[in-house]
Image 1 (cartoon, rainbow, N blue to C red):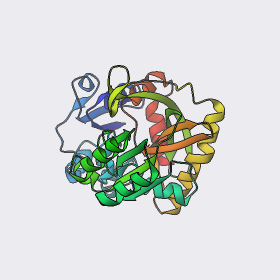
Image 2 (image 1 turned 120 degrees about the vertical axis):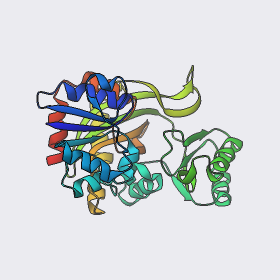
Image 3 (image 1 turned 180 degrees about the vertical axis):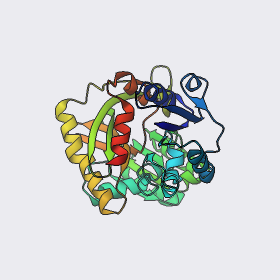
Image 4 (image 1 turned 45 degrees about the horizontal axis):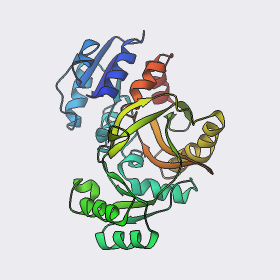
Length: 313
């Protein structure tokens, strides 16, 4: 098989390393890749935002599978556009990628399909959001609705912190991603990352991890996309895994199918394990970074076989 991997981070390096070990692989390309990926793949200069250029490259090189690493291209609809050219893609459609592209969309999905999550409000203006914070109280969680590279979430312990986070969003700190905000109940518990491999109808548990989000030593400072990770997550016992599948993942799969956007790819649930059980914090629609790096180190199976199975159903 000829495979094209899109992305340039540690996540993509881990995926490239694992894909390169598959007996099914003939040639691995990566765009844009990085020097580490260049050890196991041929790096190509492609504008990933130009979907027609990517499609033309795939046709020229007879690419059998495109693996999309980061969330940006998925939310922009690259999977749909490549499929329209007859190219096989591992990754969700633009409609399904709304699970990550809009936190408000995901919260509304949870409300509609009874998926346990924090109480919330959605706001498109500063005054309404501040009024909600005043009503609910602190601590409280402020989230930019759109993609913000893992930096659009503020856990505000005081009213001043909450109002400052809201002002930053509506003042354009996150661009269009902060034009709408989600304000959430603060949940007590232990966070965990839960990954499932999905084919549009079925979801199978893939692995668990926990990451270190805050930028500073001693778990201090603002959140990031992740400073490090380990796997598995001890808090995800067999019982908690079963509950997460039954209460969160399976209703999500049914809900997305019901909305006409069946989910295929990697579904990454950010969870809070509370005294009453698992609650969904947010969804990502691709492998996490840095979590993917520790998941690939543990995976004993042929990743390319698994990706093909998810694509083919």
